[in-house]
Image (cartoon, rainbow, N blue to C red; front, side):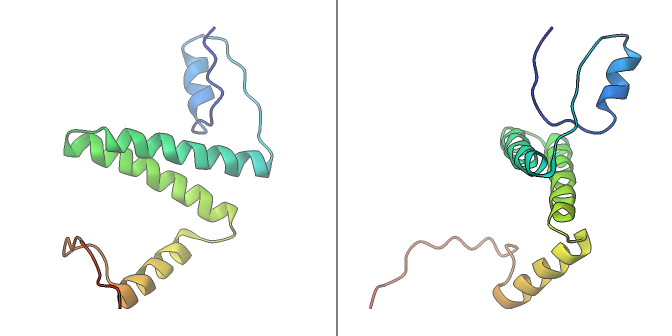
Amino acid sequence: MPIHNKLVRDRIPEIIEATGKKFSTKILNDDEYIKELKTKSFEELNEYMNTDNDEDAVEELADLLEIIHALAECHGAAFEDIEKVRQQKAEKRGGFKEKIYLIEVEDD
């Protein structure tokens, strides 16, 4: 039986059960959950980095967004709170739409 030892989406056990396969799971405590969400975010970011077409990229971005929603909740914030902070930062410092790549800044 392959060992996975990773956080999975809520319906994965139900999906595995429907195949008739045996499996084991456990419920994480809050500290373990945050740690595993952080680990999962790197996994999903790596999958995004390895995409080579828009469809796959959007799929992986959706996975990252799901993790961001979960992490926001862990930190006592609604996704709307995260979006508000994002908008404030964009107003103050701008976004990334203009594709500006900083080369160097002269020291005084």
